[in-house]
Amino acid sequence: MKIIYIFLFIFVFQSNAQIADFEAINFEKADKIALKYKDENLSNLPLLSYKLTSELTTDVERFRAIFKWVCSNVSNDYSMFRRNMRKRKQYKDDSLKLAEWNKKFKKIAFQKLVKKNRTVCTGYAYLIKQLANLADIECEIVNGYARTSTIEIASLYAPNHSWNAVKLNNKWYLCDPTWASGVPNPTSYRFQFQYNDGFFLADPKLFSVNHHPEDKKWFLLENKQPTFDMFLEAPVIYGNAYTYFRSHITPKTLDNTVKQHEKVTFSYQLKIPVEKDEVYLIVEKNEHENKVTPEFVAIENQKLTLKHTFKYRGYYDVHLYINDDLISSYSFKVEK
Image (tube, rainbow, N blue to C red; front, side, top):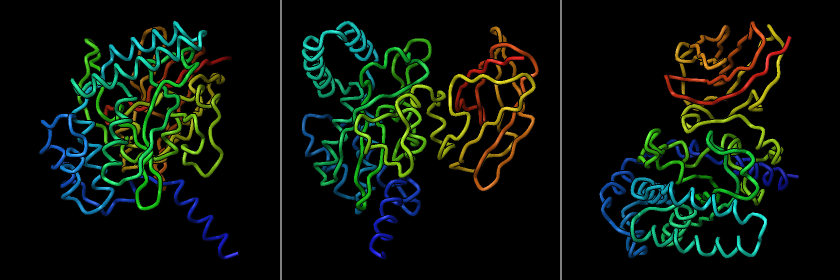
């Protein structure tokens, strides 16, 4: 019985692996090393891995230096990404042509990675894995589906994203170097480096809202894993959510139907302290938007709860903001 208890404890603890496990670690030295070798190229990966990790004493610091270097030196090539999506859509009903294109595209992606430090998610995940493995850190590429505000549900007929799982202190952790690296400029769509630490050893609960692995073991969740339909129906969460939240609780879906004058509850498990007056909603209807202070805001045991009532019928888009950072979006149909 004691052995079973120990096994269950290890399993649950491992399933909840996240950055909070390393609160005692100061990553300042690892980050400085990543910055020190900013101008290094990718022509000699063993040497680069050695330079990034040889002065550090723990695997988590070594992995941090690798992750931070990749996210600060490799840019996301959106034109290549869009080209790949067009080709995959073109060949989605022809498995032979699709396989041929996938093989060709991998070569293109890795050539650009090595020559120009530009790539797409596959290249990011590959580079993280190679540099980590060269430092004797176990790391895997995870393939699956991912959702952002710009990805149409209809396009998710095949896996569209890759990220990593890394083993540290005998526990697996999740990270997404592509999304951690930066964002497209809203006007030019050119890539902008904008490091997001929330995607480094991310909480599996929050990660599963917009990441759905092909291999279910990479959810790293001890409770019921989200189905693919749940993933497709989930709200849109943005990179800022990874700064503030450990998990997204409700609403569970992007599209919701409620009654006029019904109180709608929004709830989240917090990662960092938040003040009530920092939280607000932007409510859009018929291309008009209003900044709204929720009628109820509570923060107890690191759980943030808001309530909002729709007084009038119609269709609404609702966006949650904290400290002027866009966190998540939902749609509501309000009926009589």
